[in-house]
Image (cartoon, rainbow, N blue to C red; front, side):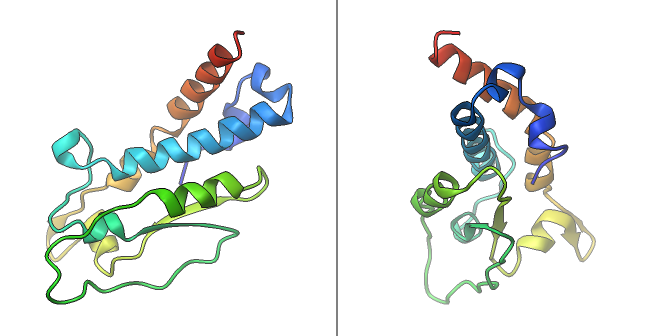
Length: 147
């Protein structure tokens, strides 16, 4: 999901306690999901038509990837609910990589391009923001603690 290691990006203040480190780790992961999930209409890079691609996002810990899903016929619109992803992130330990993956069967062609069409690269563009996200979450955690 991200460039560079988490421990290399966090501030010395965050490194002082496990609670700070864990909070910044989880907040950074949630922020990355929010960035990936932001539709173009709201200033993001994710193309949303029926919402199936956006709703297909799942998060796992430990590297077990879910199977692909195919959009069911006859359903016109899909809704994204972040609750399940937030639960996975909230339960993740600092030594467990969090993987957020789109299970829609057309997610890869949409990201990387196919049949002569350029990819949207919404995941790659979000990943490039990892260092800034961690830095912002460190600063926000410090501000909340009055530091």
